[in-house]
Length: 203
Image (cartoon, rainbow, N blue to C red):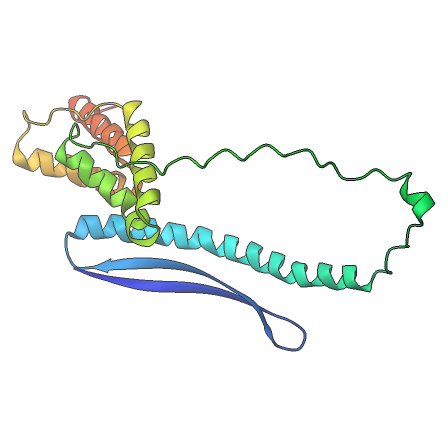
């Protein structure tokens, strides 16, 4: 299994051609290993890279606007000096102590996945793989937590033990995009839907 890192850049330059800022987004692609897991990993990263383009452009525009605002401020006339008599009519800044900022909350801990079945764990790991490999453990743990919350409101994975191996493969194949490309909640809903279609094929 091979992971390859790719980088999107958004550079801004001033009128003289000098670099003002450089923004970037790193994403990775997987080659080899489980083909379904690789598909979900690559699809998730591709969607995030598409969304990142818009954020990079927005940041680049803000970077360009920043120096322009500074030039406008520097070109404005200096403030008028205030005489001692005038100073008495101006309010002075408060010297009262400011309340201390609340301490930042601890990063989310990795939730327990032991209560899930193996297919659901595979789905969650696939969905959160981009956060795990590109954004760090805090983002990865937060992704796991969000997926578990969504899964709690979704149908439970149905029992497929009564079906033949061929039928199981058909059901799993129909839901592979939901399993690796969306999330375990969508995957379970797809499984339920496939069982309903098998029981009532004319619906």
